[in-house]
Image 1 (cartoon, rainbow over the protein chains, first blue to last red):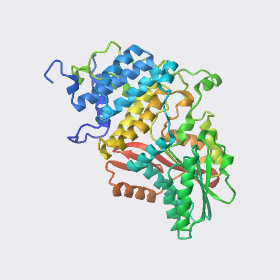
Image 2 (cartoon, rainbow over the protein chains, first blue to last red):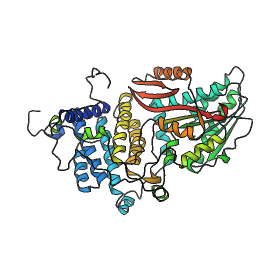
Image 3 (cartoon, chains in turn orange, red):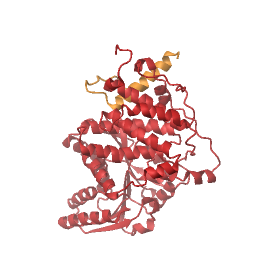
Image 4 (cartoon, rainbow over the protein chains, first blue to last red):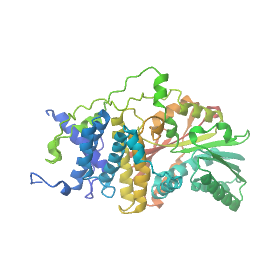
Amino acid sequence: KLPEKRSPPAPMSATALLQKAAQMGSARSSGGGS
Amino acid sequence: SSSAYPCLKELKSEERGLYLIHHLLLCANHVATGSIENANHALERISLHASPHGDTMQRIAAYFTEALADRILKSWPGLHKALNSTKITSISEHILVHRLFFELCPFLKLSYLITNQAILEAMEGEKMVHVIDLCAFEPAQWINLLQSLSTRSEGPPHLRITGIHEQKEVLEQMALRLTEEAEKLDIPFQFNPVVCRLENLHVESLRVKTGEALAISSVLQLHSLLAVDDEKQRRNSPPSVSKSFNSIHLQRILKMKQGTLGEWVEKDPVNICSPSPDSASTSSPVSPNAPTEVNSFLTALRGLSPKLMVIAEQESNQNGSSLMERVVEALNFYAAMFDCLESTMPRATVERQRIEKMLFGEEIKNIIACEGLERKVRHEKHEKWSLRLEVAGFGRVSLSYSGMLQAGRVLQSYGYDGYNIKEENGCFLLCWQERPLFSISSWRSRRYD
């Protein structure tokens, strides 16, 4: 994984949004429960 | 938000983006499994927030929903045909939008420049040079080559360019521009037009002569030859089990915690945690070794003993047999492409919308809504192309550092921020931020090894 970059104040790029969506998904699957 | 029922219209860009991603994937899953009702509901929800004039995710959502809807509609061929019965597909518009892409994004400029540098290096000292352009519509590439050849220390060669394009007028235009330039530079030059679609091309029509050094240039063109007649393929090969969908990435996205997305993400009756394998797309995955059209084409090209062949292709896996796989890959690829445009041009520009709608939008539609011979946008990663080219008898030639330097200079002089070029085993990857979007590699017939 790439190191966390300081995110710009501008609206999130679509790429960043997809990454965030994936992270949210993985946080949930590693956190267990449903 | 503190309100229990925040108005969906007031969603902030980031929340809205996540909402759109979530529902797009849900919708794609419904389309893949044939749940039209559910897909329709998802499309309705997305449509409240998607817009071709909005931020990048809103725009992407608009084009993806159009593509998903088109796929659904294709199960009613009558409806689909009727809705498209007055559609005008004009070649000139197609050319225009490619020219806009060339002018406004750096990718084609870089591809042409790197290709030309490789040709110059390979053709050093050659007196008779023949260049074949598999998709001849942009004279700028060859004007640049003519100019570089005119300053060669040993003097310019006799240059012949064979251009392949299905539209006669495009080639006539090209011949005119190039002949004019060659005369100005005093280079002996001949343009050989071949009016033909690439898939119907016979290599004999390229009229390659002995004694001339041959270079072939293919910019974002070869993947269209991967289109296969799925029906024919199925009849001729033993039935293969459709690969069940197992992209961890997608599963993760589909498992997105509803709470973190906000209360406005409605619970969906469908179990989104375990996407079932596609029922809608059952085409068998074609291995790169299968005797497909592209393989015989590449073998035929190699038979011409090219001293050099430079290939630029999209660096993405959009030729998967399962729809979900393609949707996820396309989302990732086009997110980066839309981000590029967002960083390069203001939202309201007509040129930007043209590129998004007529180039990216049409590609997305082809990837998602089409199957079989109709599905031409079959981007595959460099890895797979390498394998194919090696099987066809090509050996790799490393691209040079000076090509890299020149490309870097172009990025700088045009002020293209956020783009960069990476070198990987002699092949160049054109990247947006850190993400490779296009690959450029060069090859030659093994005869020269």
